Structure formats: structure tokens, C-alpha cells
Length: 119
Image 1: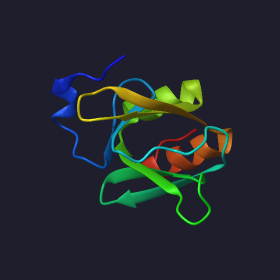
Image 2: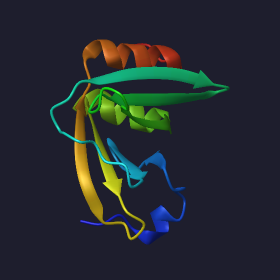
Image 3: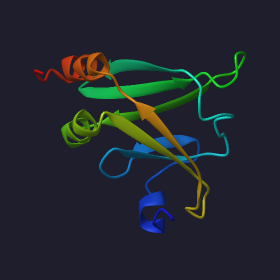
Image 4: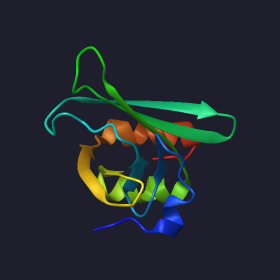
């Protein structure tokens, strides 16, 4: 599977953008070292936008940060799937790694609260 060139033109190197449903595309050379590692969720508000940050604790001294802005459609998608699928891609759009993150009900409540949407 590949991510379309049209979509990738909107993504800067070393950044992540929601793609479709509950998927996020990260255009980067950095990849998680392992699939079964703890992940911390951080939610920030920047102006009127909500930023999700997943801290992938694959290396104790240098965790991998995945951050991106979300909208209500993305929130509704992850609320139903309770999963975010991170697609790490190269500049050609080839998926080099797929990393799934399970979200708890508390995670969803926290995100909804920051977006100022009731549960």
C-alpha cells in the first residue's frame, strides 16, 4: 500500500497529518524500534486547534514523538475504533511501518474535553 503523492505534497518532512478514518501519516525516516512498547498520550490546545502527541517509549533515552492536529471528524473516527494507526512513510509514499495505538475511554474523554465536545 502507498500513500498518494497528492496527499504527500501537503505533508512536510518530519511531520504527521491525519490521513483517513483513524490513520495518521508521518513522513519521516524515524521509525519505532519495537511494536510492543508503552505509549503516552498528551493533548494540547494551540489557539483554536487541538494537538495530539503520542510519546512512543521505544528508546529510554530518546522516545519517538508523533504529533498532529485533529478535527471533529478524526475525533469521531478514533472514538468509534479506539485506535490510531500511524503510517510511517517515505517520500515516495511507501509505508515503511504501521504502528497501532490503542486508546482508552479516558483518553477519548480527555481529547473530547480539550475539543470542548461532551462525551
